[in-house]
Image (tube, rainbow, N blue to C red; front, side, top):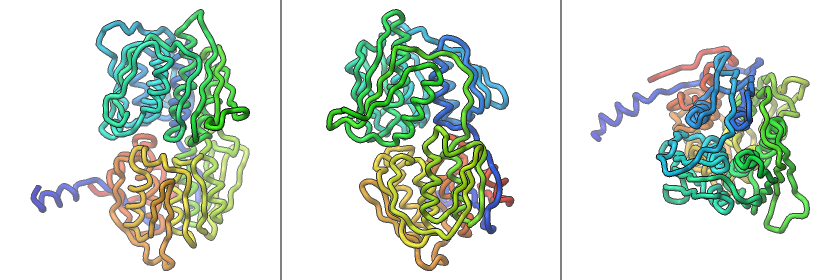
Length: 463
């Protein structure tokens, strides 16, 4: 491509610039949790009757799940702008036969492909799950390897390295003990947990309990607790076991014979999304109250506030909200394995702290929508920070002289969390431009509109 043409192409990429302007003060309620929405949708889809979900998230990730459920015969009616969902469950296994597989497009939604790979293998049927190019680079072999020994049929990954697409030809599960590795994603375990009652449903009169054992480290444990809580709400029997395990086992999950039942289920606001607004208070020295999220929320990412507290912020946990007040920020050494989706957010907060911030326990972040260690480090360096990568995370060292932090045009790598977190640097640094801001539609389509309303001033948009 000629240089002039390349420059024109690069200049045409849409950008958004958050404008500095003092302390951020206000109240906000983020949209419903993606994690809870997709878990509740799956449980409702395989419950025999009608469930009603309120507070649901409407985004690319949840739309992908809804489209996939529609393709396998689950009826979903949306109301209130998509925040209310009426789900008519389907529990009949599909005869795999020799017919052409049902093709399901999962885009780059990790929850959708991992949850459905497990669920559909348990229910039975003939399926092909595929996504965008990046999805075909994200490993899923730990999950398919776990399913294969209990499967009546076949399951395979098509791309190299044990990556999607995934082909399933199944008559259901035939075993009741499953072993799975937990070091890459807790969603493998969550998917297997939710599939177990579906397997019981598919067996009809031949129901039995299931034991799932995690081999080695389990990352992001709070998401497993969340899965268990949602499943119990839908009538499943779930027990998490951490005692009397073999040396190489970190946790076991006992799933009883009970199957999912239709219910009415209210979904919390998204705690990962809330992290951006709590961070806005920390970065600007302001005060932000997030409504609908408390210390007792199902989502582990509310613990992000504890990291901000370590960095010098004040946190007030109310009966119906959580408020963060900014303070003098200091660097910390913190293990974020349990809240790894907020690493990018804390990395931006670290730009304005005294001293380095060391983030540990998140080696699995390299296998998310993008390499959330290497690519994040690259963009933070553009702003003037020194960043060292480690096997399990990174160290962010801001310049002692804050005036040496400077604006830059930052890549998002089609990763919604890169766009949302990096944009917060613009609260204190002039000229921070975020490419492809529309990628936030994956989990939070209205993020920039909500941020604009909270800070009380307009962003600068260019295309």
